Amino acid sequence: MDGACEVELRSGDVVRVRPIRDSDAFELQRAFALMSEQSQYRRFMTGTPRLTDSQAAYFTAVDHVGHEAYVAHSPDDETYIIGVARFIRYVSAPDDAELAITVADTWHGRGLATALLRVLTARAVEVGVKRFRAEMMADNEPILRLLRRAGMTDETVRGEVASGSIELAPPC
Ligand SMILES: CC(C)(COP(=O)(O)OP(=O)(O)OC[C@H]1O[C@@H](n2cnc3c(N)ncnc32)[C@H](O)[C@@H]1OP(=O)(O)O)[C@@H](O)C(=O)NCCC(=O)NCCS
Image (cartoon, rainbow, N blue to C red):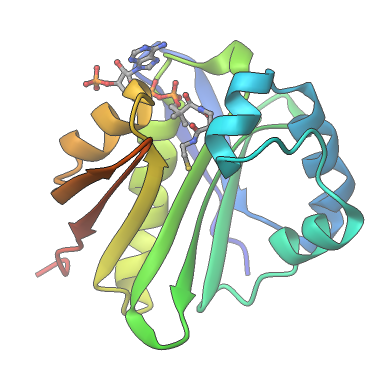
């Protein structure tokens, strides 16, 4: 599948967004290793300094329906992944999917997560996902702002973890 597009961010930067591929495994590991400890912790909510080979294989060998992910690159350098957005449908509740987004620290605040969420949402609607669910650290202001703006409802906080869901509207 192709599904690649160029997107202009809030900052004015233009990036290329495309579905993830098996061959991205090594680059995904490299990009994750370059993230700050805080970003790594916020992504997995545990201390995870590196993605193992089996994690990287799982995160890249997606079927594009039950598990989908888009990566972003600089348009003039396809080598380096600067952001990833993914959903993984729950086997027991396939209308719902877990959402996760990660952006390289040097790209934070430019609108990349916002753009990735838009692309991922369109794909999710296309394959019949009706709701994203997300869990995040309760002090993770950037993702909370992003998801609230995307329409997050039933936001709850238990201890250090917040959760909520986003209803996905069909295109018409
Ligand atoms: C959460 C994350 C993906 C946001 O990526 P981003 O590309 O910087 O986000 P955007 O630029 O699209 O901005 C999204 C919102 O966060 C806000 N934001 C961005 N950086 C921020 C910061 N440092 N402090 C507070 N708010 C911030 C933006 O203002 C925007 O909110 P607004 O539209 O209401 O103004 C990024 O911070 C990240 O990768 N964090 C580590 C991994 C993680 O926490 N993932 C989420 C759990 S799965």
